[in-house]
Length: 116
Figure 1 (cartoon, rainbow, N blue to C red):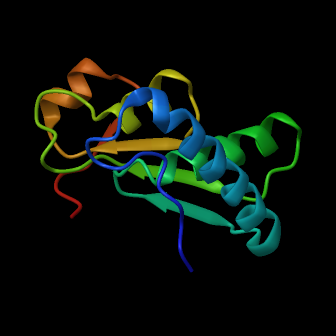
Figure 2: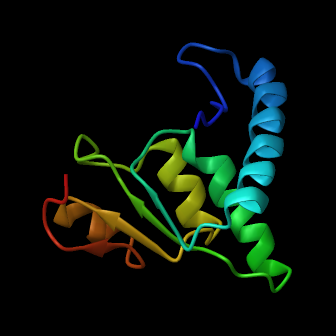
Figure 3: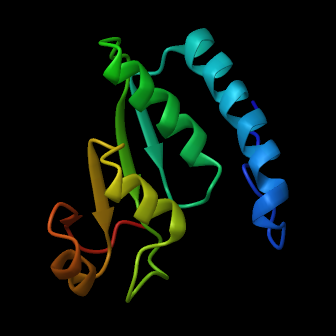
């Protein structure tokens, strides 16, 4: 099953608004159809629309999914844009980082060593 990308590499932020809205609509359809118990994301922006929809359902009191985000091991000093958005907006149940310094910078994150 294909998950639509919010933004292609190199795509402008202006044009990514439209593609993000399409990705969110597709994520809504997927969430209603599948009703996953767990959403495990590992970094790319393709996961953000699914997390947004899961968070939206949680706000409405419809909780189908627990959402876990694992930041890329390549992120040593700072979170990716996806990770930062999900962390700052409290959209995931747990956010895992793979470097202790990131845990220091983001106290709500979890560090349990290398995961991937």
